[in-house]
Length: 221
Image: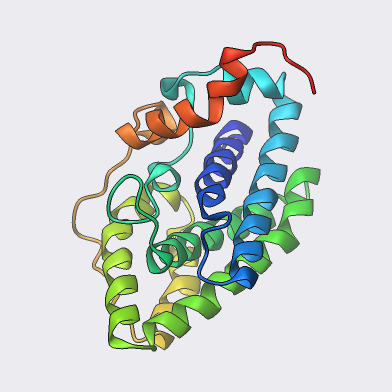
């Protein structure tokens, strides 16, 4: 993966997770998700700074210029604007497992990745604990996170290109412990995010993320 692809995954993920601020089911979880979002943003900023003007790269590119995988731009619920905690945890499990592997692979030669290793391990642990808790919890919590696993699963192929077997070795035991059924790998496998072909969801996300900078170009605080 290129630094821009890693940066865009983290930047878009940060924006998505930021939607939970003040809306999480408990104050503790509100803080946890906000901190994970800030960790994602920190990685994105460091990588974008290494590539050029971080403000231009974050705020002035069109959706077709972003190189994030499709998974990170998807809503954290069934529809745009929805927020569902079970869906968010499944999304975070899949993403953090992939990021943890990639950061560990790059840590020896990349300072940013080396700094992100511990953070990604925390994200993965947090998602793991909640996946098991929800999956092996009530009938309703199980139903919601199982639905999320099935909805997000096709998008994990693009996320895990080149590391899928290792990623499955992390994710499969978590799903099993949470009494969740892992979908098969022989179905639809959407892709295109790495080439700038995105879902409509990224356009809405960027419109919100970039609006202030575009309305007041060059503004300082």
